[in-house]
Structures are given as C-alpha cells and as structure tokens.
Length: 463
Image 1 (cartoon, helix red, strand yellow):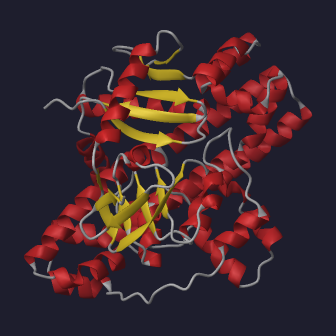
Image 2 (cartoon, one colour):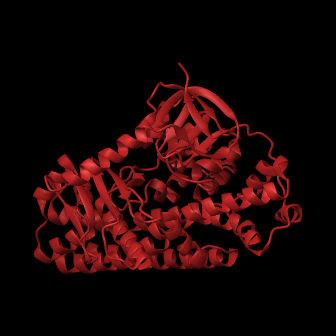
C-alpha cells in the first residue's frame, strides 16, 4: 500500500542539534522496520521551527512494533521509569564533572571530550525518551482507544464511557508540573520553585525560555474544577470483562499516560544540565549562543576537529532555513541548503495546502460543546493573549500553556491522542477538547468564531 506525503509533526523553537539527532533516530527506526534503505522523511527548518514530513510507510504499524516490545505493560513502564531515574542521576554526575573541568581547562581538546560525553548521553535520550517512545506511544493511544471503544460497545456500557476513559487515563505518578502545584499550595516559596524547576524551560538543547516566578504563580492559580466521578480499575474490569489483550490495555493505561509526560521531564533535565557546554561552544567559536542552534551535532563535531565553525551556513539557515534528510542507501543525514532544497519546500507547501482545505475533525478527548473566538497559540508568549471563553488552538500543548488553558473554553490541537497533555488537562478541567485534527492551526485564524462539537468530533466556523 502506498502512503502519500503527510505532515508528521511540527516542533516550535527547536534547534538543529536537537532535531538533527532526532531525524537520525527516526531513520534508524524506519530502516529497521521496513528493511529498506530509502528516503522516508525529511525535516524542514523555517525560522526557528521544524516541520517533519513522511511518506511510503505506515507510521502506526511502526509505532505498534515499538510499544509492543517496550511500553505495553505496567512492568515495561516501571522498568523504563527506573532506567530514567538512574540515567538522570548519572547524567548529573557526568555533566557536573565536565562543567567543573572546563572551568579549569577551556581548551579545544577538553571541549571536544566534553562534547563526546554529551553525545553519548544524547543518544540515550533520543532512543529512550524522545523520538522512539513518541512514535510508540502515539500508536498506543490509537490502539487503546479503538480497543476500549469496541469493548465498551460490545458490553453495552456506553453510558459509562466517559467515566471509564477518564478513570483509566489518570497518571500512575506525578510529573514535575503537578509537583510544583502541590508544593506551591503547601507554601514552598516561589523563588525556591523557580530554582528547583528551572529545567522545565525547554527540552531542546540550545534554544529555551527561562521559567519565571510569574509563570509559577499563573500555573498554580486554583481553578474551580467540576467534581469527577471515577471507577477503580477493578470495577472497570468487572464491568467490561475484557479478554487478555483488552485487559493489557486497561492495566497499562495509567502507566503509559504518566510516562508519556514524564519522559519530557527527563529530556528537559538532561538539556538543562548540559547548557554550560553549548554556552562554552558559543564562546570558543565566538558566535552568538543562539547561532549554535543552527548547526547539527555532526557539524559541531567537525568544527571542533577543524577548529573553525561554518559561519556562512549559520547565516544562510537563519535567513532561508534548510532541509534535513538521509542520503540514499546510507544512514548519513544531510543538510540541504537553498536552492537545492526547493523540491522539498514545494512538497511541504503542497501538503500544507491540502491540510488547510480539509474540514476539521479530531479525536474526542473530552466531550462537550463550546463556542468562542479562536486564539492560535504558535509560541509560548501567545498563551498570555488568551481571554476567558476563547478557543485555544495549537499544534500541541505543553505544561507552559497551562496559563492560557485555564482561561480557554475549549482546546483543539493538530497532534496528539487521548493520552496527550491537552487531553489530560481537558479531562481534569472538563473542557471540550479535540486532538489529532492534523490541520486546525492551518485552517483556523485568530478571531474566527467557531463551535467546537466534542460530541461529534468536529469544528465549524460560525458566520
């Protein structure tokens, strides 16, 4: 079966060191799965945003093969969690060693050795906490939803569907933002929370926005939440009487939901611990710190060996962007500059135009109907423009968006499934939410008056 080009995902404010490594991991996964060495995807850097496009492969089948091996049971997730805790502990030791070492000996040789240590760490991040689990858990969400919906219908339990799903999709443990809220309301000083949780600023290794006291206070503002009914897992199993495969999805759900968000905590802590290295690279090569974000890791490695960074390429990419893809038949990720990247840009534009013209349909993450004016959130600063009753429209949401999510009447996202951040927050706040639309940020504009029908899974414009 042929699969046409489609947009896989978008990442805002994402640097090439982070996503050059991500596309390498993605190609490893695809070539292992298909056993064919061909061009399946490319990434297009525009400004400071990266757009990923894919074709000729069933990404859900790829993800299913991954989650069945590593993320399909509570034990799997408990093992991944323990590994992550140990990894962060060791990373803290390694990063602090090199930070102190470079403070004493800031030579090219020492910087190269520190960079090699970072790359070893970062390979683990990409394989265990970035692109691989993202791919796996996206597929898990679709399969979980299809399995549980079919089971609920078979057992004629539709009247309990919302309560069943909300109960199953409650995280196994707290993530960092939930810890912040708990500590804030226990009276921990905001200055202490800003210090202790500064790592939440970003999971990209170069570009980031600092966490501020104002952000902590806004995130922790109490919102009157509706009372939520809940079933125990035991009661759900008694009600639905699942078979072995169906029961596996039910039992894994709270663990998968937790790990899906917690892996971002791991990535953010890792990036935060190694910030000193990229600050050191910018000083050594005498370029602006943000400019390091326009060179993928292999180019930084070459620059250290040659004792010279490619300033011309950095300026070209800042002005015109670039494309990353694999060389034919060899896993060698290339950066394609203009004008050679034009065929990729035209392909991306054609995909974007097709998505813009489509009707908006999404996965129902929280039922309900809401009307309001669209506020498209393309970057963190946009959340502060949301007013009470607005409809928040975003590619995806992050903990940083909570300030605006508390004001919005409903959420619509391009990406994600029922275990996504937007879906979890929507269920907590009982706000209508559609996820995985694919095209909401393209088809809707700021100020559009829309109706979000999260009973039927549609969005329509109101004249």
